[in-house]
Length: 373
Image (cartoon, rainbow, N blue to C red):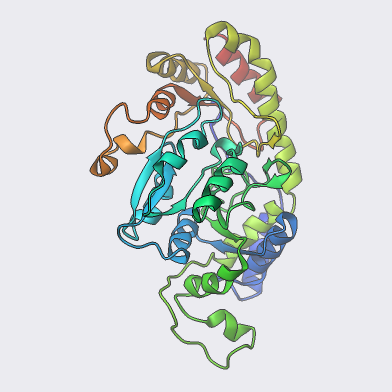
């Protein structure tokens, strides 16, 4: 079988894990955590990067940093992972779901302004598959209304929008280093802080609500509880694993780009003949090459494709179900027909295998399986 995903291993992960243990600092913010922070800050030009145990934790930090309260509204795409919405619902916010574009599967920015009310406290675009949202329009609308933008960039690290790194455009962004992502440490994440006014508050929240970071910098002679917070530090053992990958990020991206572009070129004629839609990359966008998907004509054909691929020795999967139609989403008034594009895409999408160790033999097997459908 060709696996759908295999966690990326580039070579120095075990070496750095062993070194972290020898350093005798395997909890958060040790040697490798700091190396990850500084590498990402330098490469992306971000004011402050802080690793977290997961992207979910990073999203929860953004809700705390924005002081989200019960009754606040947060605009979130209907087609995303549940962590995006949970982070804000945990603070008592009401999610306001927005439908997606049929081309990029990202937040439909043409529907954004009509959803803004006096209760709107955040807008959370998700760069689906590592292809950028239309950020100029989103930021223009958000700035006009004085609403913070948090980029859920779980898919998009080292992707670009008009020569700007994804995750550097809103006031904050979040990253995922889950085993399914381009760069991984099994479970992990990061918060990117572009607004300097939020940096110290983020450090406090991440350190259980204490000013411990100031203490370690010698700015205070003892640290104490100063605000609401939680434990949002990534173990340094995991940071060592992650750093091995981040220091060769260009190599990893180049391999994923080759796989993505091979799919795109080799499947173009077949897709056109079968009425299958392949990913669309708008002009000025450089993807992160995270996901390659096919949109089949309907649910029946999507399910048949997944079965066909499995029979041919290829594991493939569908993706998100519409949040507004979930058991929890219906509590906020969701009903069939509210998000027609999301509902259609959710029924028709299938993701093909894409991972760093994928070779030409696996690629040939996937291509033969798809084109024989």
